[in-house]
Length: 488
Image (tube, rainbow, N blue to C red; front, side, top):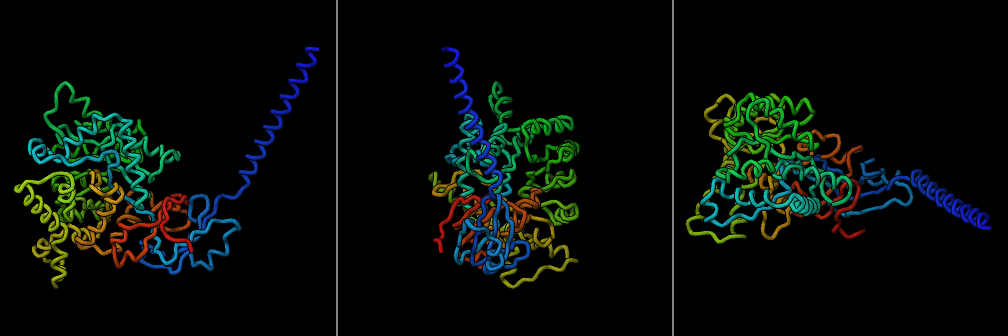
């Protein structure tokens, strides 16, 4: 009898398992046969940054996280299946998701007190950088997750994170976002940036110096070590190599970095501020010059001829640091005029020519080199040179009263203040940036086949570029992140 009862008990279990298996299989099969989520986004206007054309009214059909069709609503609606989600943004202006091509998501330093700045080399940044390095990697990644979410909420759907992330913090954050564990923009991660010893921090405790530096930088001393540094970063699956170039670098070292990176199909972004460092970067064949404050007209010509990008980082333009100083510390009567003078010098570097043009001056004749040098506004010289350009916020600072995203997007209208036309500003953070990143087939434009990354503003960003600071609709991969427009 016991054997009979066991037999029926086993048969009952088998029958139950078979039923569960059949139900699971049927569910999977039905899911595979179900159409991907389809969304129709309608808006009063759609700006194409590449051409400057505006489609009005506009509709974007999205399927499976990618753009399937773009056109007039009457045309696109004919292809919308029953049950599709429809988002009507009314009179809003649609744009591609914004791209911040130079950021630092895993640091958020508060500017140190005046006396702390005065007693240290690179005193505005080093104390906070050291505080970041001694934090646990887990804590830094969680900070980065917050910064990434705030960037996304402000309309930045893609970033290139260029260092100050620990050994692999930005890689871990990238993977978590890609896996859907945390919200944020898609990230091109650089891992540790390359730097010569002493370029960022000096006079560290010798018992700890190597361990501290190893958490944040890869040291380069000779061409062989330069190649190994690239290979070390490859161990952590980075997307791009970031190098901080100083005059301490040799051309042989930089060339070795670029050759090894390109052999591994990685681009090289070079932090280069002064003229000699910029020349080393150009001669080595990097893919982009970051900052480039002292670039000469001849160097811009070389960059243009080689197809290199100039990546604007107008972080300090327009009194940015003075405002965050005022929001976090009390400035002495001695420091405040120095800050204001620094603001003015930065402003003049960017827009000297722009002011002259507003006063009625004309562009100098190409043959008059002396007059050409007089018109030395950085923005205008880059634009006039024909070099490819993009823009990044270089944001890695705590801005009182603003989220990281709000602080980041506040930097882009500064380029217009410096003389760049609004359409060029938008190109710098969409189509141009996508090309610089090598992702022009994925992001940067509202076109069929690209990721469904969309933002919308209430007004016309060509008429008022500060609309970029007031993004009210954000979509990434066809997933709604934010929508402050009333449904119609």
